[in-house]
Length: 469
Image 1 (cartoon, rainbow, N blue to C red):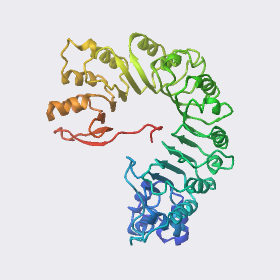
Image 2: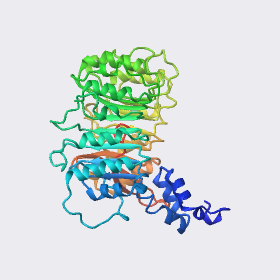
Image 3: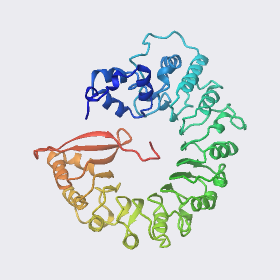
Image 4: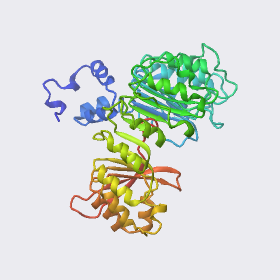
């Protein structure tokens, strides 16, 4: 890598206004840090003016909003904003500290803080993503404000750069009317990604919101009995790639099927329709560009068995039952691109071994009950070594997304068993499991000794799917 001083005309010698303009166009904090590492002069340009002003993730921080309100030259560079409820179990907070006035603020008026939030959002010239998590919890200091939601949505409505909008498990609290055409939420436009985690939205407003973003590439939406799939009937998204539908009513099925047929660009679909209607919901020829599918076993089987789309390049399939009919379907289609399979049920450990021999190129695998004897294995007395041996047949496996294997390894209380797993599965990097104490999914990340010594491991938050991020 060239250092700044090695360049014919060092970047750090450019006028400050020019360097600011250039650095303001860099979205990635990682790229900024890499650039800052080239010289002390570059570090002064980047830290903290840019390194601390790309992502904002806060709960109740009036002083942060006041700072961003008063410093539009710094606030303009924020790309991603996440407002978290007071009790949200989410990622740690991230906000500017170096240039922040750390003196304790006097009693702050709620209206003043809301005004600061809105002005700060208005200052974010390059804002691309806004996420609001659990905004209506009873302990939220602003939950009683009737103007909070309207004012913040009004600020976002005027953004010319916003392309990703998420409301996670929340909606405006009771007493705040959103059922009016001029409510600002319904006028946020030109989005590429939309996530609405609550199903109680006003239908006409939601239709307005959707139609104002014809270039949507990712849509995650919940549809209730009251808010049926009719809301999608008039929508046309020619660039839609990712779709996650949460439905609670069978009445939506026909409209959703029509929507799927009208959007052949979809590459990733997550949809679990009513089990009773799942056998024949998707018509022949639908979803020709589908690469990743998360659905019921019957839906997955019907789509995969559709020979009217012979060139579909499936990369990921979820919720499969490992049985002979499923294996026959997989054997009849092009699985050369298949790298990720999520197995819901399997008949016995031997069936997993046979599956591994048929699909040696898999890099990601999920078998939630792997490590727990099935009914077919009740008489076999399999040990942890048998499960490790079976897993080793997936020679290219990098990530076991979810299984019961790690608790089994801990019960053995033997570093040798973990080392055996790492040695027999040379490409395995991550092993996922559900921690019953923390009530969350975690990943075990393996660290191999270059000299062949004992392997070590660390624990991290589980990787998230696109619809969970």
